[in-house]
Image (cartoon, rainbow over all chains, first blue to last red; front, side, top):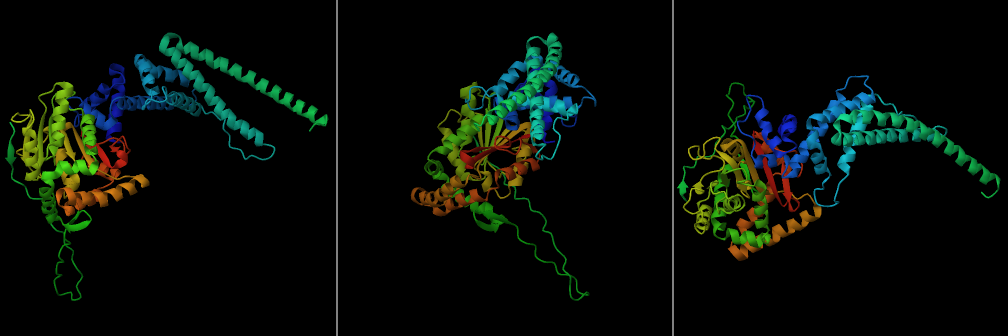
Length: 229
Length: 301
């Protein structure tokens, strides 16, 4: 692990007291092993040299904390359900909850002024969590099949399902996390209600999709038999 | 107090030459030792004995000292000022209190003056100090003259020392002394870059920052071609016209091409014990103008 990566890891526990700030990064050297510990925090120029100037250093710390969140998901016991994994990730937010709105706003703010807001970090964050949660719970929506003439549409369907699953989980987690920032006590119930609603929604959508495909096939058959095509 | 101190120049460290034993056709004869291969260094595109590089570089800077600032302005169209301003402002000296700084190969005082002005104007800091060290007395003399025109003359904030960057005298530059070590457009002229880096590591305090501004590798092929054309035609020509010394400026241009590229120099900085950012632009180094100039930084942990 590089020196700067090591200091980032040491900074993560300091986020709860100092927030996602350069101060947390500067104080990381106070937590080095006794043989290497410093008596004073790093200077501003040292923090800039290691992590970047201005808010770049803070963004590096936020990204390190988010990666630590992914590791927290990976450490969930085998056989955990999706609900348990996502709840664990929400619990991971609790010690630093008051700092999160500013952190996400900082991630969304562009480096060079345009565009005014950059949604990609937020999307990446929620999609990574959804993907990791599916992986930990043994999601098998992406089955590797050789497409042949009869199976081609179903392998496309499998690939779409992979994206659908992660997309819906990302949306559920994002909504739960936003809810947690405003109403932490009800966040877990909100997550449960969304997960329940999502499975109901999925089955409803499947039925609609099947009916729609029959309807389309019927229309095509009628048009063909009328001799227009 | 503005003082120009002459320090004893410690000779370059010499490594005992290694010897090889040769197989002899007559087993009874003792093997005759071969002469060790002479250690060489690059002087621009030429390869010269290591011992003579220092003298050659000294001659170059003795020659260019009086017109150094003029030539910098002429050859870079004043852009070097922007690079140096950007370099110093990225370090933010004085933001968190006064710093003890050392500016090596900073004979004419460019960087030292910027550091003191930045700390004063932005943070009302009049306690930050800069020790300027340069191997070349002529360059130091130019720096001393420059500072005589400023408010820092005769104050403890600035001092000038004739010293070798590869072997800074311990009595003047003890271990773990400085908060900030700067070297701008000077390290490529040193015979042994690792020795300079080791000395930088020695004199910095734990938590201290090393920052090097230097010409570097341009990776964009189009920009690189234009830059090469300009460097090898215009700069020596300007040297002839403005300073009457083509060869010195030819050396300066060639020495830029021999300097290690950004990742390699970052690795050399880490090899002596500094911690750097990641090996990308914006991490361990920051390119300016596509890599024409580059700032490498490291922290002593």
